[in-house]
Length: 580
Image 1 (cartoon, rainbow, N blue to C red):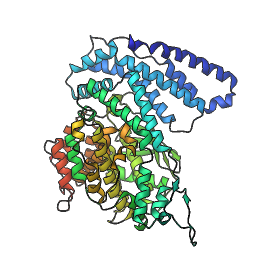
Image 2 (spheres, rainbow, N blue to C red; image 1 turned 45 degrees about the vertical axis):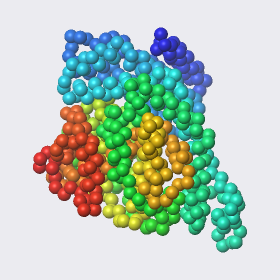
Image 3 (tube, rainbow, N blue to C red; image 1 turned 135 degrees about the vertical axis):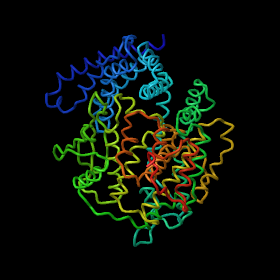
Image 4 (cartoon, rainbow, N blue to C red; image 1 turned 180 degrees about the horizontal axis):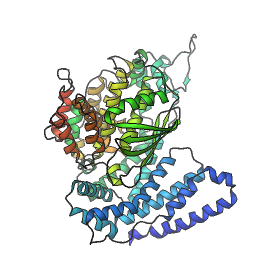
């Protein structure tokens, strides 16, 4: 009975919100109604019904899967459109409407995942051994297993929101009691007793390292007291989730379907990436301030996109400029979708609709500053266009295959490979000691340390006791943090990504290794086809074997990455792709 409790509220919500939309439309002017698309979207959302009939047993599993895809494409599109609009500043009324829609869709999806039609699709696909059907079944099983009970989900989201709130809203107010750690005003002998500037400003301007360390450590402790209950609650809920699935810890539960499928493998990878850079976090500001930036030529965003277009010809990807705000993207003779351009102070990429071969074309919005004048701006622009192209170039006829990766820690390999590919052609080489090189070294070690903290937090108690965060901090930064017990309370990703925090660094290293191993291949379009399009729905192991040669497993890939980037054997120099 429990699973049907949410149906009546959801259906009631559907009619009440529909009535609310009608009433507000009578009050608001036509001009106001035309301003916001949210009410119409929510009306479509609350009218959506999941399939209620079981599949036709007389049809083969692929035909039934295609039928299901056509029935659910509306749900997928509504869900994606909600995510798109959440990027924008919305009125309170519009935010409430989107929330109502999300609650309704979540309730209905939970019921559908437990329904006969959904389970019949699972059974039907299990009988089909074709790679695409096997891949689709993997995604469907992942979708069904990742569903949580409404009560558990509500408790988890509440604790996560509380944790994030304490980290993000802690206003910085440094009251320096020790006069030796106060910062003097320029050209005066007076001091500022209540320094209310940014932490970064203080760390850059304070000459005394011990003062910088004390202030940095105090800042890291700002949320530890208030967040202890929230983090303990999240640990307990995650452990409950793991126990119910038959695993000893949440780390093992979450990692069992990843490329690095155990905490030991993640630990092995992180050890190979640990490097003492001798730059403590409280010193990084002054290090960056004293380093010279990598210079680039300033260019307007439109001209920059034309340069990208010229480079992409080698991958047989082309732009069709509809106007100065719309690019129609093609791969060979296949239309992928539209990229809408807008101006913004920051580089952003906002997916609107996912391409599904045979069902619909994709839509993505890219926002750029008018001028790309700095190295980091151009690097972010390459990241954005790489994300857009790889999202639109997926070669699958099922939404779930284009949006849910076989593993979480391989989900962004294609975009990161293309990012490396474009950066090598469009950005100057970063020199050792430059601001960008120092920042990259520091960012990597910060990611390594945090990944170790996140992995250990969700491990079984007997494994936790062998972990020494104090020593691990020193191994990366060459200095000691007096209160490393505060480390889990310093970044919100620990309660969202949890043990998967390592995946960003892992995918960066794998993608770079793929690029360096294949960049000397003549047919770069074939690399793009294999890694990005993947029309044959090959598994990640098959794709890596095709690209790198010889069978690939997690242990061998970790070792390849480690020794492929050392000083003696920087990169693979010959092309082994497809036995060329």
